[in-house]
Length: 57
Image (cartoon, rainbow, N blue to C red; front, top):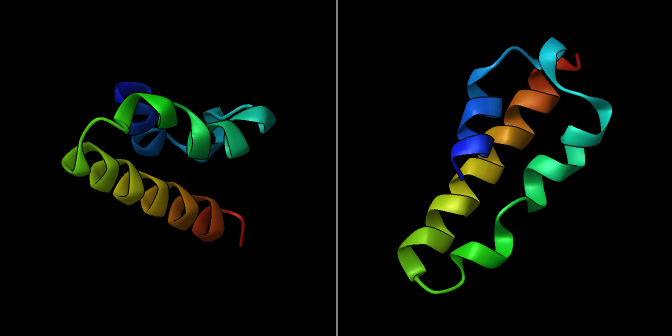
C-alpha cells in the first residue's frame, strides 16, 4: 500500500494513465487477511478517487 500512498501524495500530473485504475486495485489481495488493512485500503481508494475527481475538474 506504500505505492498507493505515494501516488496519492504525488501530483496527478505524475500519474500514468494506467495508474488511474491501477491505484484502486493495487494491493487488494494483500489486505484481505485483516479487517484493519481492508479498511485502510478502502480509505486509500477513497482518497485516490477524490484526488482524481478533484484534479480532473
